[in-house]
Amino acid sequence: MKMIIRWFPGGDDSVTLEQIRQIPGVSGICAMLSDIPVGEVWPLERLQALRAQVNAAGLSLEVIESVNIHEDIKKGLASRDRYIANYIKTLENLGKVGVKCLCYNFMPVMDWIRSNLAYELEDGSYAMHYDHEEVLKLNPSLIAKEMLGGSKGYTLPGWEPDRLAKMSADIEFYQAMTTDQYWQNLKYFLDAVIPYAEQYDIKLAIHPDDPPFNIFGLPKVISNAENIRRFLSLNDSKYNGLTLCTGSLGASLENDIAAIVREFTAMGRVHFAHIRNVKHSQEKVFVESAHLSECGDLDMYQIVKAFHENGFDGYIRPDHGRMIWGEQARPGYGLYDRAIGANYLLGLWEAIEKGSK
Image (tube, rainbow, N blue to C red; front, side, top):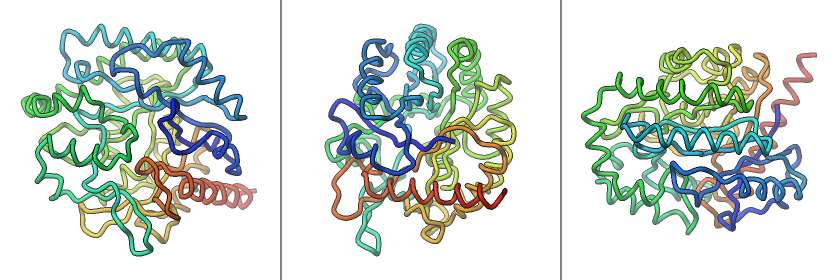
């Protein structure tokens, strides 16, 4: 496996490539071009410049995260074919710069949501927090205000301005759509792009819904083992796979994360892993805790062991971290706690690997 860190280029990150290079065991980054409007082609020259910048820092760029899907594709509108064509062209350009894995999602309207982006923990650190009842009290305009107001001036992937402007109308649109129709729209997208992913040798890795339960009547499709099985059956290509995010799936107490890891890793359909912990105070109230097992509800040893024992050879990144030691950064994406998380996960991996010999 390869340990990587998410990084945002173009001055949109408090963390530098030089700092990432100094984290032991981290060999690369995953990145996005956050200024490209959703649905438009990512230019080859921009990607070439990004690769050169990353490589100059001694890091690899084999994973791209958040080439976001235009809402018209999810809605199944006639205009979707134009946006799918743009997506395919972006895949071609990604292939030309050596990208091997693309993490994306098919979440309607909002990619992810939290009720508090800077919730204070007992130790004085800050983390993202979710309270289902608090979220349901917010109307779309207040949701956007809460999320962007806590962004520390950085972009928030999945909360693009053009998307926010149409949030109320989009929610109403999806409430009139059946979940089966949404699945059909997802299959239409997969059948269109997977042949090109194969051609350009880029594994597509869908991210789970975050959180994986119903909000505002929006369809949730990547939320549990049953739905993941259905997703993978939509297109049997090995290039149609998962970003297995333990924190997103772990937000539901009904999900057995280690079992999910075992099942889909053994199938060879997990291409990317986001590994983090969560701590619940109620069924749908949780905080993104430190990675260490004792800090949350997830047994990180069993999770990492399930990846290792089932032959995972893809990419891992520590996922959202806390804000510690006074750091000011994009929520979830500071340097310090993610560096600690990366080395905790690498330590588990090394111990499991040596113990298996």
